[in-house]
Image 1 (cartoon, helix red, strand yellow):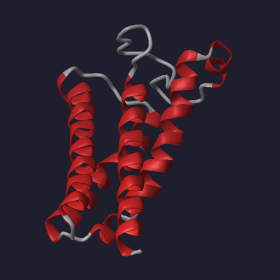
Image 2: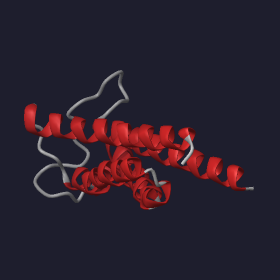
Image 3: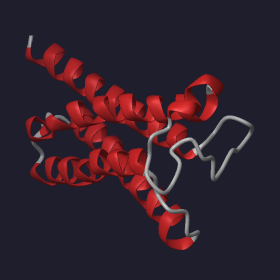
Length: 141
């Protein structure tokens, strides 16, 4: 595997690791109870640490292909939850359980919430993996 491909895998792994650590910090240290959509995002993010970590150790980017799918789905879930938080008309259809999915535990700069941060992590992983695939394709041609 080329050194550039390894860099892309490392970047995706690092973003997933920081996102996982951040979600655990908010729930376990600060005590913010995750809502239903937060759990879905965790279900999609946590395996990415393992997927990209194994691909990096094995130096095989083909192992990481499920990362594109998981990060793409994560972007959709994060976007939907962010819209629940920020679009006034959608907060009425919040059907989450004991914790409201439209609740905003943090709101940095007036727009950066937990789903926004998760969504940006999913976007960075998705784009990084797409760049990896494009680089591999260009090299094989």
